[in-house]
Length: 336
Image 1 (cartoon, helix red, strand yellow):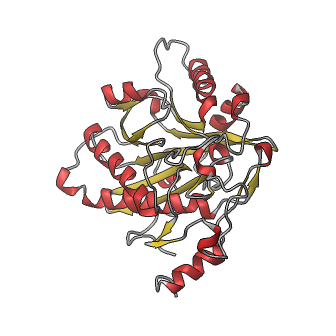
Image 2: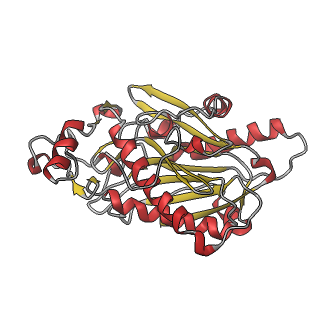
Image 3: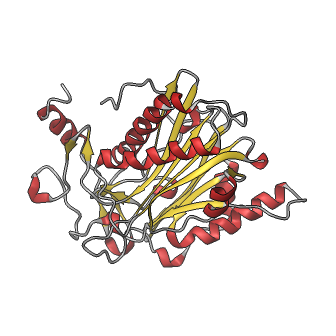
């Protein structure tokens, strides 16, 4: 299965962007299915050009207003479950202060999605040690995908989901993406719908309690949940141009079937590790394409790399069947 036409980076991951590292802590113990994912760019302490795009603002993105105001990010980006976001932000702040004894003002950036269907979210189980382990273990290796880190307890488009990553190479640099998926809609792979309703196709498994696990504890019929998208690049973009890239990341959610429900928090955080702007707006076509292709593939990877998970109160989120996806794509003439 190939998404788009641009070549991937060597790892097909956000860590293909030079100087970008990822670390994760996973908590998977029955009633607790949650964790932390850390995206750590080199040079963050000096401030990197950055921007945030909001599709639906129903979420808790700590530190977003200062990024909007100043156009820079000055800390790693951490992802976790909704009610742990504040504990994670505090632990990140401690980690940063320990490394800079002169710091008096820092803007930790922490995003979230609601993993309360599979994890006892009210326990807020993330500890400083969990956060520091994710930060300290961050590396340029291929990040694990699926039910790991902040994606341990998430679901999307009616199936088990989690963390996904991808990248695309353009002539002057790389676009890399990491996603935490937890939103509603109908899974669509390369234009082919693959609904989760059991009676739509006998080969598709429905959620065991007929609730859309991507919609949290007590979902209403029109609720969604959330998606966090982190876009990294080494292209010489300024903060305004990075913002244009971030908006394309949100657009890409529609390519995999997001319904952008009113109860959803859909955010893209984009940054560049290159502090020397010099990119023409008329040359943004390739970075835009690279972003939409990378996000689309990362979203799909977050589902296809996930495994069926049973968690809080016996709730189960079923992984999408690879055989079913291949069969549907073959029937549609997309896959031979």
